[in-house]
Image (cartoon, rainbow, N blue to C red; front, side):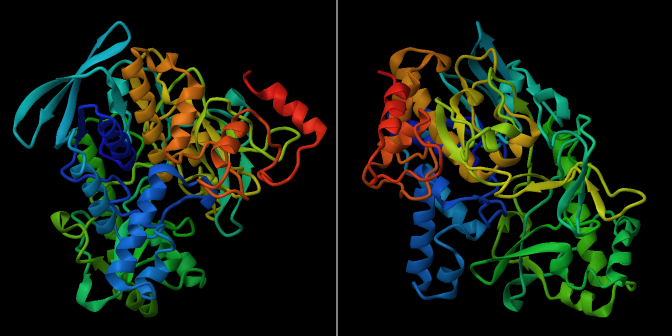
Length: 537
């Protein structure tokens, strides 16, 4: 398993629990990806879409806060059932999962330098083990690429996409170049031309105003005041009065906040255009790009805290926030993971597009996927790919957010996990999708669900002597359902309740026209005929 992201950890521990010898390779010194690297406010869309290992993770977060601080404590109230958490708590839980798996070997600082393929199968990977200063070759029968960049599959020669498709390529209403009005919060124009631009990255800082835990952000290595002076007109107009108007401040337990980009900030913490070269860059180049993102954010904070043209009230407000001293001790309280919102997207025989997460024609539901292995529900969105319009600074290029009315909870087809031309590699993060489709798939609960799906599929392939693209999907689905994986979203049935698994499977056969299962209601004759026709007798 390449990548100790939450999805990679889900895959690795599941395969190890099923008796397989697993090597989990992580290029960095720390594990846990974005959940342990600053993203403490879970993007999930619908609670009904959460199951499997992610639901187990939520339960462990809840136990931590209630047992450590008490059920009525501020921490327990803020955590929202485990959905909101501190990064060190995420890391503790994920490290515990890995340590509890006796068949799992974790290799940190394992840089992928080569892949050996034979007849459409990856036979081995070559890594530079920077922790031990040696080069190693690891052979295996199954490979899971759970990196945010898709390095393993790409190095094996699988085709991939970077950037944005045109509006015409897949008939997606919001594909290609578009403009978002940051004050009206809506798309105002879709030009529709495709390009290789990548949505902006940032770091999700963990901030606090708690004096005894507050570390003042250091100055950047390189400071360009002109990059931030574009904030001054909106500040002067009274549209930006506090730090939270420029950087999104999202409350976490422990008197902390998850600090994210705010589209109304011109700029905010996203480094627009800074990610375009990242997906295909080597490790050294990626480190340099990450440092540019760090300097951008530190420069923004320095400007807001000390620039004499920033009003005193805003400067004082910004100065009240600092890095949380008790997070990320190995990197001086700076997040361990650059937020790689989108890397490569490995092409499969099926491509997930905007229409897969919209209502199907004549239906309340999104299109039915008979090979569903997971679900998602977060609104399709993208951070900016271009800057502000030169004549209309309220317009931001590439940013969009398609809320619940436009995005529908959806099924995720198994086929998008299988990169074209590779028979023993499963993708977890960099799945086969368009830029618009990836705008909802790119969330950590989805990655953990796909990690579980990759592991269960791999287990079936290893035990059955088959290729990943030649499995019984029905057997795979029933195995996933036994693990509590959601395959069909219902708004009136709890995960694991009576009849839940059967209803989920029936949902993959198209037996429900809405998001209500109504399990205690009698079927009409017409509904019964439809069910009988849909089932694989």
